[in-house]
Image (cartoon, rainbow, N blue to C red):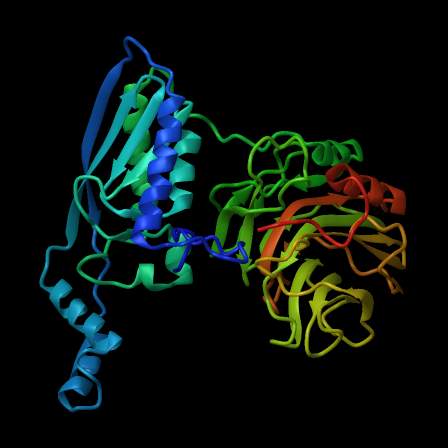
Length: 444
């Protein structure tokens, strides 16, 4: 399934039974447990708001459809193939109205709110609605009052997948999801005395406190529910920009990492398009620090993926591929891999059932000397002596200025310092998150 809407938890080594009887029993037991915990009230305010929202239909791909149907007529394409079925859908859509009218609802039950949307809604959409709702608890009911197909967010439209395929049953415009979120936000405001909530950053965890105490120039928590901007936790300035597409609010490193978070850690998932941000003048000494895990096989291409690049022709840190040291950290200054220095520890492909998937890395440059630290160890993973590059005016996370070997995976808690952190500084940050140095952190 494209996106994050499917119910299968691939982090489990063995999936739970999914036959009708097993599902019915699981749901019934959960409902019974919840019923026994109900706090009964003699009276609660009840209210409802609804609106009609007109949205455009995406233009059908009629020229492609005509070619496919011509192949069917000539016997070169099966009439029941996937291509021919969707080709017929394009031709039918071409004769239908160019807009759809959706019925949206918001209901209040005491301090609880419920939103009704006549679409198959992605999990991220529910999170976005709840995050801006003036109610303490808000949940979304999909397929309410009708059926208008899948509702992929704009970033999912760009990534593709069958939930984005155009058909009579699923054809809303690419901007339908944010338009629906805005409309139900207004309905929720009408049910509540207060306005929608502003963006809430993640709590300051011991790890974040340790980073901020070390006075970074910029610190992106990477906790955004949508793009394109990422807020600098130091002063709110120097916004970073996520590339399009990026998948937002995916599960990040889990407990016991980042104690004090108080909720599930959520992070962006990079799909080959880097995050970009302006940098202050770092001088001759700086540090870049972040958490990452890799989802690209290390034997798939010459460089598995660039974790970051400082400047268009400056320092770069990557995960090696077929060209050099598969699965190990690779540092080089400038665009050429010649003279690159590699680490010793393999950072393998993200395994859905692996216990240790997230890794902490810090690149420290002090003049011509570069040290890279991995997972809280005070001994460098690699060292290099290389000429000081020209001033880096931009930082790319998950890629380079040229878009080469874009990272496929997740990054979190990105900090940049205008000085060289010590090995103990870096190790102390890791301990604040995990307690001690190790080979990685659990994730899913």
